[in-house]
Image 1 (cartoon, helix red, strand yellow):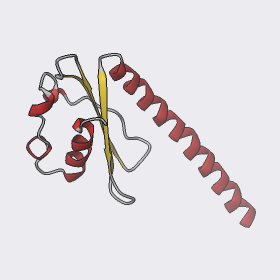
Image 2 (image 1 turned 45 degrees about the vertical axis):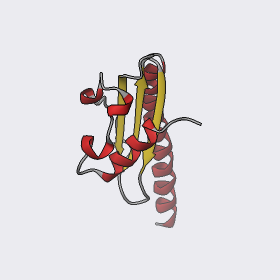
Image 3 (image 1 turned 90 degrees about the vertical axis):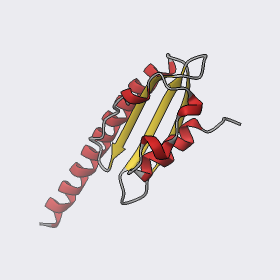
Image 4 (image 1 turned 45 degrees about the horizontal axis):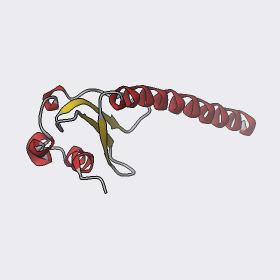
Length: 118
């Protein structure tokens, strides 16, 4: 019985590693696509037991959003998705509390993504 539990734990751990790698590959492909569009700002928020949010915005030479990616969730099945309503907006017009009025995690991630780089 103990041996079966150990084997199950090892198999679950290996599956977690494989699925985590798969999620990382999806994120990297989406992020590489954004980097080809222009300069990219990235913001992240989340906690240990709340859905984490990663938000990336690509800006063109006029500081308008030309690409976006939002990835949120608790599991490895979270996928990067574009935020079409932000495309074409100027960086100074991006107000996190207006764009995501009900979602504090997305507000934090957007604030970090549009913050000036030092």
